[in-house]
Image (cartoon, rainbow, N blue to C red):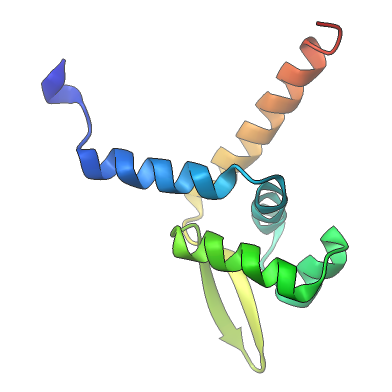
Length: 106
């Protein structure tokens, strides 16, 4: 079994990513970016938050390796770093919403 375990580095990276995703605001940002790339002002309007607050969350997500930022003219657009994340994030949200609905009365 021990020879099939991922490296310590893989678990360290996983913990970093999960910590970044654990905040509800950052989870909403990630989900929005599964739909399309967005700039800070668009995310700010979507979440009804100030641009400095959104920028703070985007910095954490970018530092964790989840996001890529590209300058498009004067605007910085945020993208999911890896397109494989789109399906994973959407499935996670759907599964958790289904789980929540099943256990509403508990």
